[in-house]
Amino acid sequence: MAPNLRQRTAVLLASGSLVTAVAVVIGSTALAATTLTATFQVTRSWSTGYEGQYTIRNGGSTSVTGWRVELDLPSDTSVRKFWDSVMSRSGDHYVFTNKSYNATVPAGGSQTFGFNTIGLSQPSGCLVNGSPCDGGRPSPSASSTTGPSPTSSPTGSPTPGPTSSPTPSPSPTTSPTPSPSPTPGPTPSSTYTRAALSAATASADDGNVARNAIDGNLSTRWSAFGDGQWLTLDLGQQLMVGLVDVAFDNGGIRQYTFDLQVSSDAAGRYP
Image (cartoon, rainbow, N blue to C red):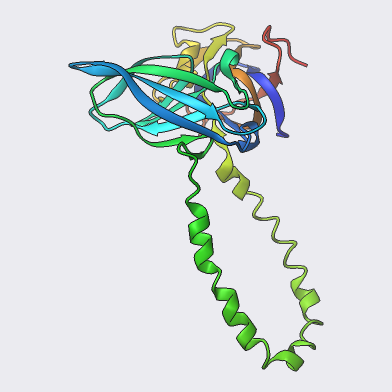
């Protein structure tokens, strides 16, 4: 599916439907490469937990719209309540994304969100929009180690100098090899991020409610009988949708047909 900027995604199903899970994946382009940093502080605490706050700052000269903070908590601590963000969780890994009203961090400005915990351990492994929260960039240090390797290449190049001039004629044969280089096309998928879904509604259900489709649990499902049943997922903000994963109950032995529509209209009007 070609990427589109949309806020809501609808899965329209043509027959009786049993959806166990729906996941929306967004391209990293939806979150701009930024100069954002994020700092954490405990604003108050008690014997069984604490209230923590993250402050996201923009040290750049232009505003940044869209932020995402990832962090890990030890197994003895979990988030009980949160505010000013949309939260998703996988094990001990937590992801907080902006709400519609605090998506933009102005140049030189900041946004905050917070949460209460059960347990006293503090978060670690903080990332903001995919980069370390302190603004560090550790990866260049590794690239510098490969830098010395080119110095050895000139030493070998003088001896094959004349012989290498004929080799440019075979080099056209290597130029086709860049055409396979599009195979790294899948690698952008590694930069894709699973989006947090803020709400799910459906045309009907048989007791297996719409929320089951986004609870991350394949043992639960949303289901409804009859043609034309639909499920609407709210992303809570405009994002670049890259792909949508849908898991069906007994999908290996049953056949399902459905339509997928996207819309940026909060009223749910689809083109």
